[in-house]
Amino acid sequence: MIFPNTLDRYLLRRTLAPMSAVLISTMVAFLMERLMRSFDLLSQTTEGLRYLAELLVNLTPHYVGLTLPGGFFIGLFVVVNGLNKSSEIDAILASGTSLTRFTAPFVAMGVLLMVLSVILFGFVQPYSRYAYHAVLHAAENAGWNGDVRPKALLSAGSDFFLTADRTDASGRYLQQVFIRRIDPNGREDILTAVSAVVHKNPADSHIALELTNGRQISTVAGAQSYVVNFSRLMFDVPSGDAGLLRLRGEDVSELTLIELARQGFGLEPAALPRETLLAALYARLARALILPLLPLIAVPFGLSAKRAGSGAAVAAGGVLLFAFEILMVLGQATAPRVTALVAIALPAAIFAAICIATFGVSQRRPGENPVSWFIEQVAAVAQAVIKTVRRQPALPR
Image (cartoon, rainbow, N blue to C red; front, side, top):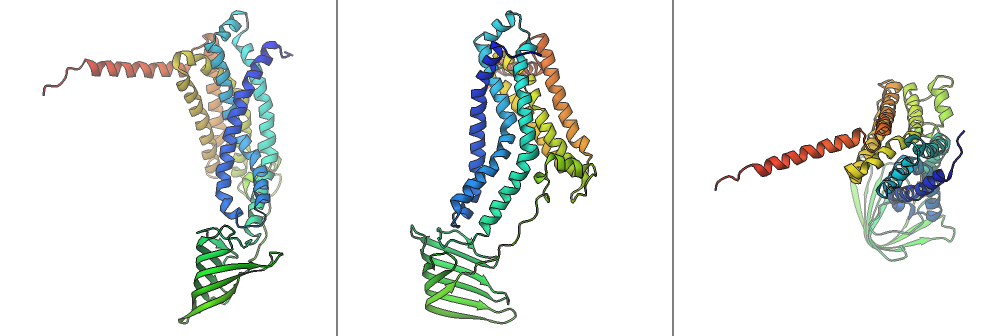
């Protein structure tokens, strides 16, 4: 058993800062993008802040697991590239430390992150995803709080819609109001008003609109329409029906690893196709198992950055990770028609082979790997094309 020495602790300490920065910044960006979609809904409920906090908590495990491979790879690349530029790696390798021993603490860190990924994707995320949908369901059916935002389309029940062109800061005084309501008998009411005032009792259990200077157009099913002009009208807002949220497990993302395995291998009855369940199981395991393999490409790419350029090296690694994730998503989408082992395990095995081959080549000749060779060949071809173009004589005018 190899215990961490001073070099290992130094390398891991250097890795934590850039990896944490990438994880936090990327996760915050994803969270803000997702929450921006829900702000309009949350702003129309009395419990908007509470729902917002619950959404943040329930979305965090999903985005931590999603950004973990990219953050780990970028953190490793930044550290190795920095050590390479300052020639610290040359001193480390010259002291007798092999490239394998140099990479060992990064692989150990990848193993720890793999365990974290299994816990997040396998057990925490399924419950947090269901809790996220439960919070959205509660927010949608919590009832309108009586505050109106300009040009927001509000619904209190499936057959009632309200919007106003302008409102004051409190959201209680409205101008240019439009309302559409369909009652249980099929009658459709369209109301417009120059202005309106929102009235509600202290318990917020009943909301009414005092409409001023408006018109009501009512159409009875199978009959003619009639129009009524009014100067003042009190209009009660329906409360709507909440309905029950579906049970957890109807979506494959809400099943734990154990549930996926038991249902996928036929040990328990399943409501979803067997190959769909197995594809989700293999995809989660593959996303976790690649984490210890990432140092095998991050270290060679960081060493080759001095020759091929840091931008090209990190871009190549990013393309590999992006291609892996796309193949996992496509594999899950095609799982009902394609065997899960072919759709998921084959791309994962190819990615693992690329990592191992890249590290094997770099181990024999540090700083050289298939990616750096490919980049150099592309650069050589580009330079040859530029020289050919420059040598061509100018066309006579």
